[in-house]
Length: 254
Image (cartoon, rainbow, N blue to C red; front, top):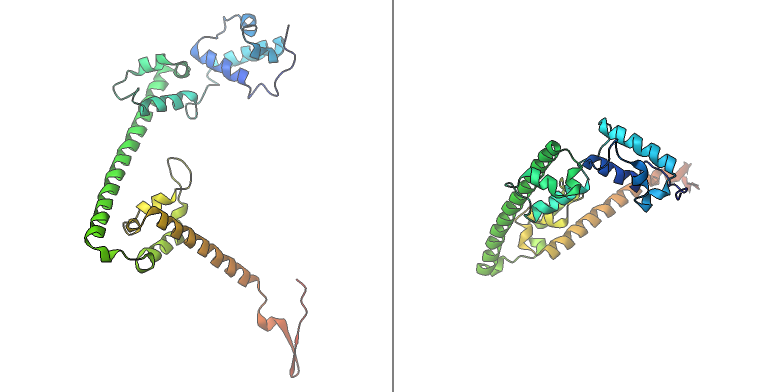
């Protein structure tokens, strides 16, 4: 019988993941013919029959006892459901049981758990869309004011250095606003987020703002570097040794 070269570890193998999903769907259980299962997929031949049988039986027992399962967060089911909600396939009026029965990725989760997770995900995405809509409207309103001001008052087109922006940007960078983390993505916010945070910034193009932001960040980094070097510099008074009326430069070896 084929199958004498097992994968590195059963614990993180594709085989175990496939079997877990089959168990959670109800396709694999205590009464299943494991030998027939073993010969049904070449992937399983990576494992010796005795090891496959032992590990599969243990996995069935463990999952049925509630010790193992696939977590909703980070699962294929959650990612797929999110795509369907954004695409409008699944919405607030959708029947959770019908949605659950529609894909194998959903069936591996108990129906009650799936209903709760589906409701929570719908609420999260709807809230994000509403927030985006409000932000878009506010941004459009502010831009309309700026464009009207520029149109009617061409003399107000001040250069960057004569506007309040340099001092505001210096303060924002000092406060670390350009390093804030987006709670949705867990990543550092993009410059456009800081750009949209002040009406003064939006009097200028994003490109102009972004260039000045990078200049300010670079300036502060160079200032910090000079300060660090200054701290390690030997004071001038310590470089000399006074002997009578003469001053002799000390040889220092760092």
